[in-house]
Length: 517
Image 1 (tube, rainbow, N blue to C red):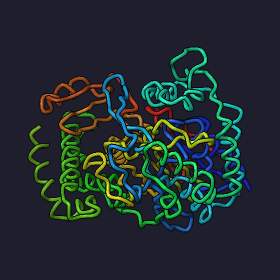
Image 2: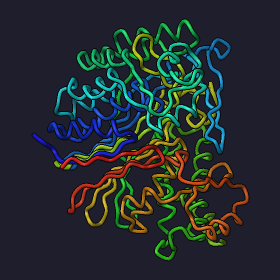
Image 3: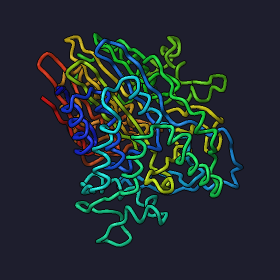
Image 4: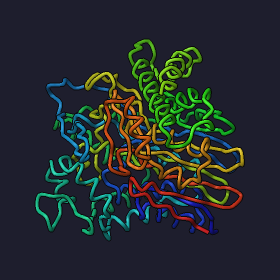
């Protein structure tokens, strides 16, 4: 039975896979699974079956569940001197960012467990059907688009490091470079692996050949994982964090992940400000937003310095903590990595918001599979106490915050973002644009953003020159970007209202939206 709906994602083929499944009668959860499998083929830097993520699911009957299948730290920690773990530099053009890769950077993957358990609970079509678009893309090949070629160029050091990955991703026309725009990416091993996985299920990954291949790789080349890490990995179902902001309700990712909690913190700080008194893009509004972001980041750092809390982020929402930071903002304001998002809503009322990450990838495939392993233990953002200081056998914290918003007019929006620490400020600004400034969703997503962290104010091109000049007087440490940039996230978003469906792929990250009518 044909199912209406809309999907937004970071690649045309990812969105097409979701639209195909909706047209085949699948629901939003079938569609988001198929889309993610396709993303693992066509967005190789941003998506992998050896990463982790979160799905915020709202069923047609109104049940809300956060499926946490993010990566887990290993149960065994190898001595640092025995670990294959080293830095590389990613070049964003305007800024450089250091990442760490190697076998010692791999955490226990959760994506496969997550997709299969969500499928068992919420799916309606066979997994073999859901995997078909991805299998065909991997086998027949996909032309590199401009955005994926750009991403490759940023992290080329990782993908040129090892012969196995060079073989798949090296350009045929420019030796020593990765695939260029228009060149075909063929992944036959990944196609074969997806075919077997779809038929045999997640046990093939966690108790079969794939787990065995990873544990051998780690034992031989300086990694931490062994068979117990795979056998004992579990998906966790959580109650979403619910925030009342103005007259809207926001559902997002709860603790132990910190992104959703910090978005909630920022919204709670802003509750006491009447934003109707501010003009969008004006210097006073941008200054307020920068200061809210600064306080949110301070709250995050202060929370992680509290050694007594296993999940420090959740305590930032305590009323007395909020008031401490809010009082500082009033004074300050008035004086003036690979992550991808897939959002789907279907005609039955099911909503799926999925955010996943592979970090940037550790540089190595799981042998014989074409699946790039994650480098989450090498992500500075995910290791706030420093590398090699992670506690064993624990869910890693994450900024990922798949979200669902219900507005006073009953319109529902599914959104989330990639972009490391920037994703929470990207989501926050889209929420403020929709709720406070009443922008249509496409304008809310494409309007310029700013990000304040570590004393540096990053400002995206597009704001009025006079507003920026005034803003920068209060923030002398700044970086102004020439236009929209993937640095500021990728909030692929969809909505459903009485007027029908709408979707917008964030142009910063090659976003595409497709409606099935």
